Image (cartoon, rainbow, N blue to C red; front, side, top):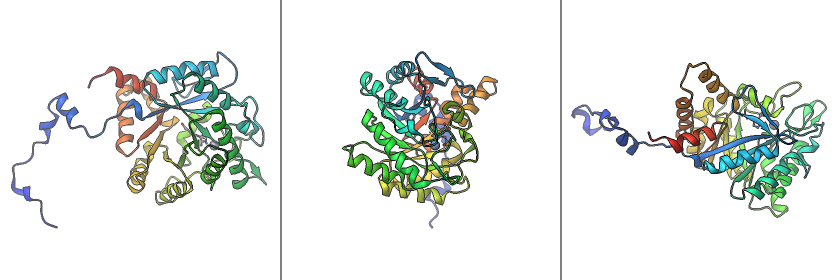
Length: 333
Ligand code: PBG
Ligand code: ZN
C-alpha cells in the first residue's frame, strides 16, 4: 500500500471544525430525529388504569382510554409509531387470549386506528404475556414446542392484522415463524402488512424490568433454548438471513447497547431497514443513575440513542421516545 501523500504536511487541526455550534452542526454525520423512534406501550384491561412500573420510572401499565392519551402525545410529538404489548385478564396453558379477536390488544388496535389513523400501530407478537407459565410458546412434555407454538403465533398475528395493525413484530425467536406469519397474512388478504422480525434477539438479563411491566416472567426455566447466546455474532447473521428469506421487511437487533457490534455488522451486510430495541434494562440503568444524580440523564439519553443510530439503526424502539422527541423539539444545540 502507498503511504498517504500528506505524510509531510503540517499536522492537521481537527479542532477547526469543532470551534462553534453552527460548524459542529454542519459537519455532524449522524442526527437523531423523532421520526426514528417507536414507543412501546403496555396495555391492561379496565379503564382509568395508570399503574407505574416500579423498575421503569415514567412507564405505566395503561388501560385503553389511558393508552389513547399517550398515543395523542406520541403523535403530536412527531413520533410515527407505537408498539403494543398486552397483559390479558386471563392466562392459560395455550395462550388463548393472544389470538382472541376481542382480546386486549385487538381492541386497543381498533380504538387507536379509529381515533388516530395516521399513527403506525405495530404489535409485538408472542405468547409469553398470555401463557400461565410465562413461556413464549406452548409446552409439550415439559419443552417449548416449536411448530405448535408457531401455528398459534401466526394466528395471533392474523387477529392483529384483522383488527387493523399496520405491522406485526414477532419476538419469539422460534424457527420458521416469519414464513408462517407471511403465509397466514397473504392467504387472508393482508399481503401489504409488513413484518418487523426480532431477528437477532439475545437471551439477555436486560429484559428484567420488561418482565415486570408485561407480567411475563417464566415460572420456571428461562428463554435460552430459543433466544440467542450472548457470545454469538456469526449466528446473528444466520438468524437475520433466515428471517429475510422467510419474508421479513424490517429486521431487529435486541438489546441495543450491548450488541452495537452486531447491529453494525447486520446493517452493513444486508442493507435492510434495521431496527434496534433499546430495552427495559438499558432504560432502567440510565433512569436509576440519573435519579441518584450520578449522571445527566437527559444528555446520556440523547447520546445513547444517537450511538444506536450511528451503529446502523434506522429505527429505535425505546421507552425514551417521548422524552427524546421533546428534547429534539425544544433544544437547539
Ligand atoms: C416478549 C418480549 C420481551 C421483550 C420484548 N418482547 C421479553 C422477553 O423476551 O423476555 C423485551 C423488551 C424489553 O426488555 O424492553 N418475547
Ligand atoms: Zn415472548
